[in-house]
Image (cartoon, rainbow, N blue to C red):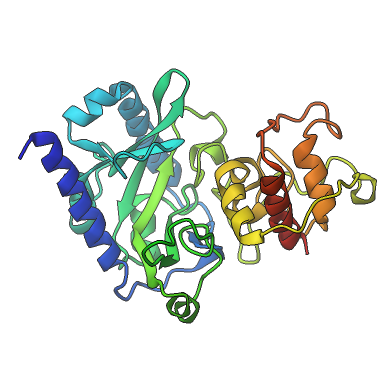
Length: 328
């Protein structure tokens, strides 16, 4: 078997093993949940945390420099997750490192994945991902990456779609189905925990919150018991001043997928934690107001960096229905 094909097969085996392993009983770790994501709570800083974090960050910076060219990462055993499916953010995973992280000790110089951002000029190395076994408790996770800095997270309550229903918005990582009963009723296969614990480091960032964010460019590194922290909690103008646009009834389930792929990077998953855009959860925005803001992104706030996504009328109706469902 060619070396490249063998590497892809090995990564596939590792991923499959992690999926199966995710079904096993996991340690009880205090978390906050949002949709299909569990995230560890922010912990108070302990002596030595900053020094440990600085060492991890230094290793991550060296890695994104070393693997600036994705071909170098591939030569060292990092293989693209989900081959043949181009994604905005790509994880190149090293199966051997993943196994060592699962059964051995923590090595900041040997991450499970190198993370690349897809740009007009090709793939750009932006971060690294470390992993830990699902069986770890909070103290064991903290021993690898301090909970006062990083946010360990894992994907949960995943409903695998039946054949012929891969595009149904009820299924998958952004799907509306979050319980085993609902998944089985829809003909899907329920996976309570997908993969293991993971933590991201974005060494090119300068803001500590973004360096240790869950996703690139998002300040989701710190969580309290009650709710996720948001940097921007208010809309650019009072709610009753936001114009409304006539919009057809939308499919909130399909809108959730559109939101996850286009809007969550600034407004946060589920609109709950906007680092570069207002928090939408609990905002009270109606469907028509959400549609207006999507259709005319800078009409209210000329300084807004929200792009014109070129959504179809159906896309706008669906994502507006989803945003309105969050706002109530």
